[in-house]
Length: 486
Image (cartoon, rainbow, N blue to C red; front, side, top):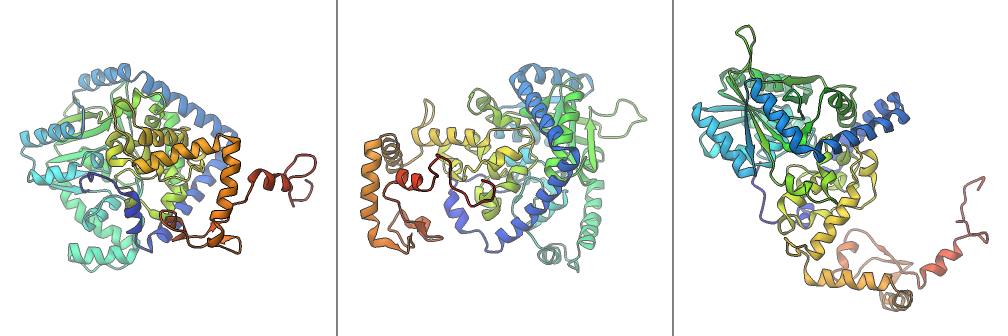
């Protein structure tokens, strides 16, 4: 993964999206959504809604009492023989891991899929220190060979065709790779197996951290996760502090939600529970286990009542799959490892408006993400708050929006809030639009409105929306409809 840029230009990034990307993304996400719908239907919608609410309540309770549960988890990990490290930010997390690697003279590190390590830019730091680092999740392995980051938080290489992957394997691995999924997987497995056996360090993330036993829980559909956490002599798990859950009963609820929402499975193929290093010679596993608890802005998010539910996220990727914006631009346009709606929430708050001020506006606010989120995060409500922060700024952050945008927003709010100004504006717009209207549409508008008409026409303004709306309703005050029985 490349380092996060000084400013994420979402509009420019979307213009650089390959023309084939939307089709590939939509094909994959529609499959994920179909699988999810099938398992939710089998579960029963009423029971599913009850489960969603339970998941929301568990996650909200955990983050509201996060200090208590993190302290409990630290004591449990230490009792089990593990080592706990606290990282205030990405730089400290990298330093801690590099110190561990230095003490053990690590030359090769193997990694399971981890969005936390992507977030902190771990791979470039390891490589700069002379440590070869290898992604072992198949999708992550493919995008690492390609020299890019993940395009989706669950399926990192889903936008690449079998033919592209075969050509990549031929170019980077020097093998004749047929464009067949099974054979490509076998080639990757053979290459990776050699690396597992010679690695000095295994690195993983953690989907959850069970507080009462200090157990790191990883959820995958490939065996690479177990290889990373058991074969090398040292294992380091990088886990965001927001991943803590109180107990095993809470975990069972969240596991039911995660697999169904992410991949349409009742349970992922590999659900692994790591509670420290081996306690006796009869047990196998790494001699040392380290847990890095990553803050990196999460405490700041927690202190903001309007935004704290961002931390409920369980990284299922369902909001990406349903989002019309993500489906048209893919993951790379966001300029941050976690993409899509919840990625926008995290990037905007962790990086701040100067870097990620454009991202809260990368949404239609259609609300589909709210409806599909398994833990009921009010994503659009948080996005609106973040938009306001970008435009107005707050006590700790300077407004990132340009003056013309802030003045325009103020003028729009004033016009829409006054009946007289609204009616006057309607009449004025009717006259100003006349040179551009053809057949009830405006195909070309002057800058900056041409950003819209470059891709689609804009409907002509009605002189009085209220009068137009009344004309569309029945005498009894109900909306007119052509549907039978109305």
